[in-house]
Length: 475
Image (cartoon, rainbow, N blue to C red; front, side):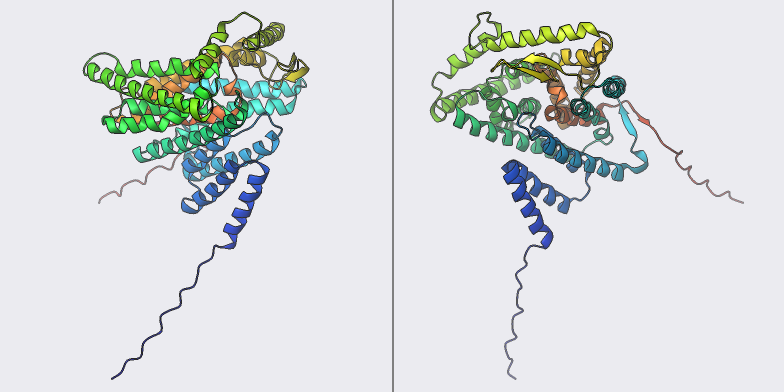
């Protein structure tokens, strides 16, 4: 019996569906209009929704990443904020779908009460600012930043698993790496200090979070990998030549070491581990200095850094210390406005006239380079008192995770404490908590920490939970 060869089935080439082509076209348009990072973000969002649709954690991580790229300085803020607001609403929708009747269940921590009080005062001053004629655009920018910090309450509604925590750290590292690439590109072109979107405190926040994971990593080979991973982020902070970043790192990193080393049993081993991690960081720092000297053309990098740092305390009126005099004039102007309404402030959206640092033109400015003065200007001494209470309470909330038995959770909590301390220091020379770039990264760290350290929950429900069915009565 002869058998004829059976024809092989024809394999059809599977082309991408129409939806993917539309997505790629949209990403191309976004890349042309904004940047390649925004285009990558569009494609990443589509892939994530395909893999895990309506997942709240992933949708919130997208919000955090997009917030870090908010550009307040180049005239694209309205378009960027529109996209960001859409992502934020989508994330909140994912949260409501995942929590349903428990959507208003919040973790009770030391930061819970001051956060609610500060948010309530902010909403009141938002309405008051509009009522007295302050500009709605400025008021809205300030409000969304304050509400962004409040999202830590919904992030803290569920405790993350170890795998989710490590995936979140990886996500943040990729975000920080994107900022590093952007900063290196602009520095290679300009060869001068460039601020704005190219150098944000986000990379420093992520770096001090990762530093606490490196400290608590028992295997030194993995600890070295942690340091290697955060080296570009620290390099980015140094390359910014922003003294506020340097000062914040100079406080938050030693704080992390002291909090980890401590006293008592096994303190010697912890301090040796700290020495190893710091020594590894120093090695990478020297390598980075060589790279800057050769690749970017800064042979006298140490002299430049020393001059930049010493100019913080200079009183001579020259190009290096000009910003000190400009800031001093700005602060005196703001203090004058504060004295007019010291207790309750001028409300959100208030702006004042000041002189520009470079061209010396008179401009209208809604912010000031000191977050504490900014809060006092808009919300008075009452708002300042609540804000300081909130910052201390956030630090206390994170420190409660110091003795958690799980190493991963402990590393995250203490990393959050370092992040909070970083932002407390940096607020004295800038206004990071009035912009969304850093606020949502802080909210993410606090939210995950709140879920780990909470002492209870506060729930608001429209109806009482259904009572369990009574067991049948036996005859």
